[in-house]
Amino acid sequence: MTNQWIANRRLNNQHITGSKLTEPEQVVKLLGAMQAQDYMQVVWAMGLRTQGATLSKIQQAITDRKIILTWTLRGTIHCVPSEDVKWMIQLTASRVLGQAKSRLVQLGLDNETLGRCRRVIYKTLEDQGQVTRSDLLQQLEDAGISTANQRGYHILWNSAFHGLICFGPMAGKEQTFVLLDEWVPHSRELSFEESLAELALRYFISHGPATIQDFAWWSGMKLMDSRRAHDAIKSELQSERLDEVEYWMSKSSTAADESQDSSIYLLPGFDEYILGYKDRSAVLEAEIAPRIVPGNNGVFLPTLVTGGKVIGTWKRNLKLKGIVMTIAPFESLVGREAEVIQAAERYAAFIGLPILKIAYKEE
Image (tube, rainbow, N blue to C red; front, top):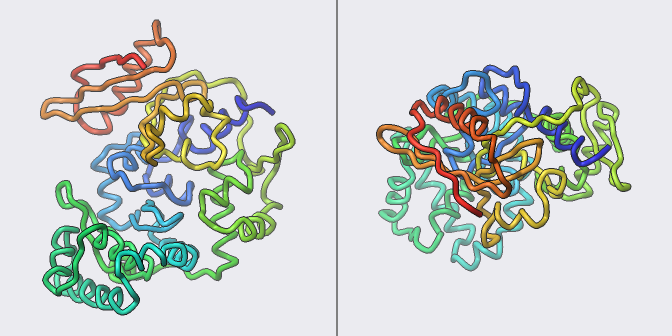
């Protein structure tokens, strides 16, 4: 087993290569959860893994309540399957809320104030259904509750982890909120142990080869709980070792073609292929990592991947008549321009606009 072997398996198991999935909700269910604080990035993450996907198809799945956006793993916004959203929140809420106590104290958000906030939010959404973020925050202001200095964000965040709200469909370029119980009236009920095992199984099936430490980081759960989850499902997994580190994956993980996939892929920012692991060294070289997260600010740029390795970043500028794309490779792409165009055109087909220009930027 080598890093290249790990990269090949992850590309396949994450359905970046050879995907036969036809619906975006299938992608989300397979991966368990997909980080989604950047809306346009996560819709492309789903589109990349879905045959014939378009932006409108992904958005329709969200409107149809097949995919839910809310705060869950690690206290961060994720896309999750609608039938799983409530047990995922229940699994993570206690730990996440406990970690946030000191920040809430700094913001002057005590339990009494947060309870009042939830009552205002509930009444507003009960009366109006879907409400934009700005309008919901204005309702809090009108009730005499300040939303300045990140208080508004933490009020909404706290309300989501109390199972009150989740994100609704976009209203233009603005997020909306809805009452979770009204938006998702039917959801699976799992115990803590069942939830842990379910989340772990999905993780290792879709993200493997991966370590228990990778799962603990991705899920935000304690390492002790992550080991318990792994023990509950390891009969369904297989393992391999590299440099004395044990990696786990599904027993059905395909080994049909262990040759290197040299195709070029345009991955979105915050993609699970990069972000879904504590140790990213199999696909991201240490000296390159700072270029993916400039300034170590937590913002993961869209990446250019070939042979399973990150070899650059990219960005796009959407204009009225089409897309201007900038490619910033970390190594020469001379002779591979046609492959870059092919990858860019796949993204353009997803967005529904033509490519106007592809520029290369020296890194």
